Length: 111
Image (tube, rainbow, N blue to C red; front, top):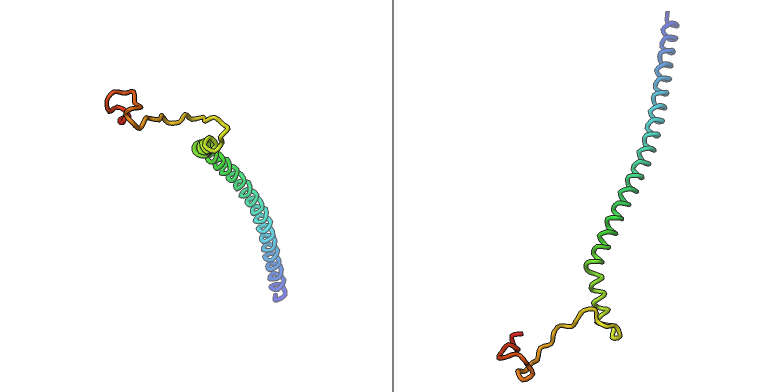
């Protein structure tokens, strides 16, 4: 009877050990596969988000350059380049004395 108990215990413990080993092996295979797919998915999402951020940044940079940088650069070019005719007309010049003024009365000083 004792031998029967030991053999039953041996068979049961072998079954439990085999079941545990196969479960651990299956779990590791599943987790490794899932982990690799998840890492690849994260890389893909990161690349997509980075491309969208880059496009947004370039659009805002282009918008800022068009609204602020280009007009300032063109104005500086007009000021600095003596051979280039001005693209903006100079402000009107008013006479400083009444003798040079064609307007009647004190309108020259008000203009």
